[in-house]
Amino acid sequence: MAYGNYYGGYPYNPISGGMAGVYGQPQPNYQQQPNQPQNSLIWVSGEAGGKAYPVASGATVALWDSEAPVIYLKSADMTGMPSMKVLDYTVRESNQTGTLPIRKPDDLSNYVTKDELERRLAEIEGKKHEQSDL
Image (cartoon, rainbow, N blue to C red; front, side):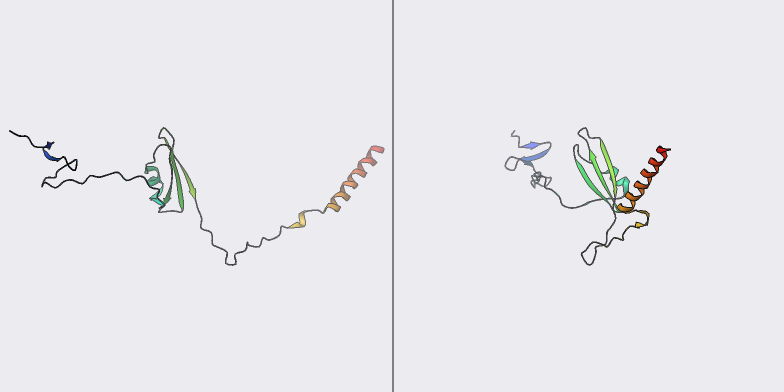
């Protein structure tokens, strides 16, 4: 009796290297795609979602909260121990003129000029000399 190409009860197709399906259709041969950098944001639902997000050992990811203006920086050290930093962010309105806002000057009433300081120091020195002469 001749035995056909069977593997685990299913016909094996030596040409494609895969097992045939139930109806004799070859199953697709999946190849793993190389990792490509993603430029998309990773959204999580609250701090609990950030804590639950898996991070590979030695990696750091930025997780954006979909419920609040918060970014979670989640890292895992080389042993796989995770840690997470919480960053709050605010939206800054752009200045329409393109110039920096004008800063109000400080109240200068509590400051002395250099000339006034030197005059007062001289008065203090003069009083010290008068007291030492007594």
